[in-house]
Image 1: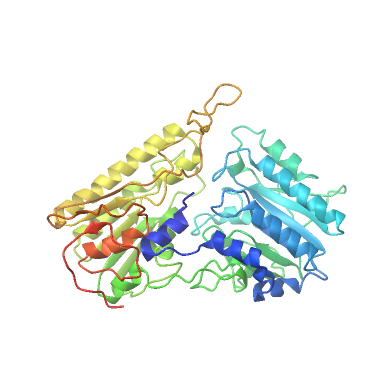
Image 2: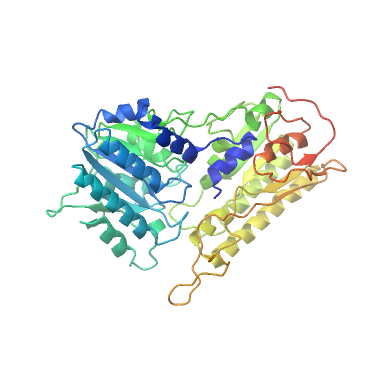
Length: 488
């Protein structure tokens, strides 16, 4: 299943790299994850402290996978000395079916019971829904991270239970409750004391392999001079990410698996060859047209040639309540950049189809898609005015199919006969459209690429700029006349 992070890596890099999930799989299979400096670092806390594991409990494969958590739990505990483990779960319902949290919890509880039989004190300590607790991104809403901090570090939450399975089932009974937005809860003992707050001397691992929704928590766990919310306590811990989530910021400073080294991206090549670039999106996708596009790299390649502009997303408002999001504002910024004639390339992400699609709200998604269409028209009109070229594509599917389906393709209905909404990305191929008055006469799509994908877009864009793409890139999608080579 495609996801935005990998999709934008491929779009910007022009190359296919082993990504987070694959890298973790290889490290776990070989055992190298336990030989690295990151694991040895947290292992120093095993003798007297608690190992805390924080992340998304899911098999969606977009941010995390439960089988990787299982391997890390069983191996890390039974073979490498962890004596006390606390898991802080975040329920999904976005990349997987809503309600699947119960099944994942049952699986995890069985694993923890096996560890307990081996003499390891292993329990779930806290939880909450991914979109309401911990997993915010691009500093859109620090209150999301604070709710997680209060539960995970301080052991404080509005809901307290003695059992995590009971907690999720009970909280899902609330009006319009779903896995994505479950409120935070903590697990307490018979006396009402939380079973697993993070304390001095403990080790913490965030086990998501995808970066964007872990960076904010990583800052709270690691940064001494932190001012986004009152942490109350800043425990002295040994913290490692599953991977390093921001290579430019070196965050976190310790990690279990080295991230992919994505080099020689199209952004770097174009900057080296004097191309002026403008990138814009609203907060929820800003990192995709900058950080991920540039190979998991923060900042500019050449600040004299590049300008990145972020439109603040709505905070504290579900996307299906405000489905138009900031599509028009992004489009108007792109239009202004195009008409200014200051930039050779303008790239934007219009997020409605993805973000509203994830809510499963069909009517809201239709509104969001209409807003996206209107935004695209604003941009294409500007391209027409300046005699430019447009490339329109997507990093994955979502809004084009909003219902769960059985193997025959028929919609799945609940016990009341209602069609069940689909909130995850789809497996459908994405289209690409290239046109505009600046497109060379006779330019056409090649017919000899049977398995072309997102990684072929970078070479295509370079060709449209008048350059021949580097030979290590996936081949261009179009046939064009001879062009000068890029300087590396």
